[in-house]
Image (cartoon, rainbow over all chains, first blue to last red; front, side, top):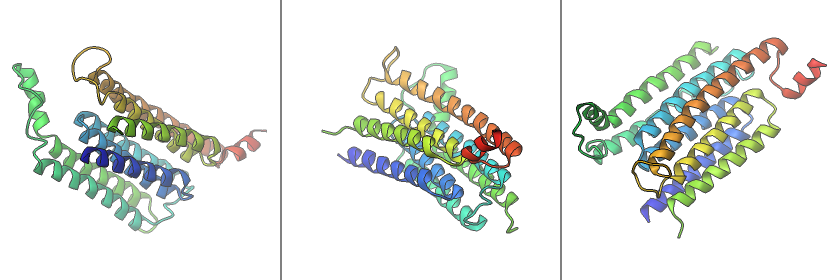
Length: 160
Length: 108
């Protein structure tokens, strides 16, 4: 039952953020919403049993592709970050905070501690070691990508 | 009884349809690429959901297979979007606008 509520809540949040992303007239608002949608999808992947796919989702779409979008928006000059660099920074920082909180909850619940099975092979023990540290990995990654987005936003901003 | 699989499958389908609808009426090429990203997200979610209730073991039709396809789809989707954004930048340099109808007028 709790799992049903979680999946329905995540689905509603994902659809809401996607609707904002698609129907907002401001491109920067669309970008922020898309960042949130990708992050929520990564969280859903992680919660429903595949942390590797979830991490990849967050790294690729919330991180790299979002920075790429931001660079293109600012290069083409169509938007000029119409909500302002400060608000944009706050929105991205809030998204990063969401992921950090999620990772902390995951750490506190002990999700990161136990590998799925005992690995007899030495090479598989490496994966086991990495598995133990996956929430910490998430924390480091989100810090790096949030700072990359904020840096790019401020690099092209006229407020600086 | 609504399962997690059903919920995520319907969400994935909704994202795909929303993305396709947005691609068809979008008036900014950047937003068109964003809509394409929504389609990719929806496809990934549907693919992930299709393997939720299957056993976690080797072989076709299991969770490992669907997760591997999601992984590949994420990488391919990101690469396609990078190419799309590069095309958008080139179009902007050539025509000075990102509106598809204006670009069409400038071509003729």
